[in-house]
Length: 323
Image (cartoon, rainbow, N blue to C red; front, top):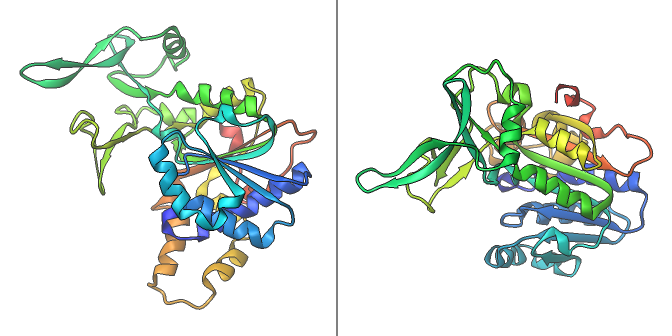
């Protein structure tokens, strides 16, 4: 979404401002994990500088030094207000608003398959004549075995799906840093019921190379991106175990639509543009059902609040009850 233009970051900044108002603190402290090329941070900072009445602290968690250099180039204008850390553990516990956009889908996952009435984990082996091949075996850890035991018993076989245990470790790490505040997660994914639907028997794991997508996961190792959709129900329950409450969950189109959408659009691109202009294409790509408007979901979790607020991002739709 940040690659479409500045509109996405400007809209997200409206929700961040509401977070700041709810927290009622003098300092506005933000954390972004998985900042990519730095476009979202740039657009958020540009919007907040016009609206925020307090000092802004923006922390980017980036373990890759080469990626951090790319981000620093994109954010040169705001370098005095942005600092980089390698891990979230370098951040002193306090009140923060944390945002991640398409981070969790990039975590490593366990691939599992149900055959013969049981789920087995899919491993990678190498054969001299066939190269890299998939081979089933026992679950690689007790945590994975426990997760498999909780899966719906009526899943019909053959069935392939993924388990992202890294999400649990991630939200636990975040909980150690955020003593009070919010976590906003934007990613493509489903609820548990949708994730394990009968028709989704091939899972969600896909390979991306350039502008093409395919299911040959073992082709060109190291030269293509592997991603899996996020199970937001897992993030919800593991977040609760870590001390967070889920305030809202909605498709991206509904979330952005509740964030002073018309005012932000007028401020960013005006109200006079051609029907087939790039400006209109930017709007459509963010909110139309055929694209990121429906595939991407937004979840907000909170910690340390005395009362659960009603956020403007969920005034159109809030499907948290489906998690």
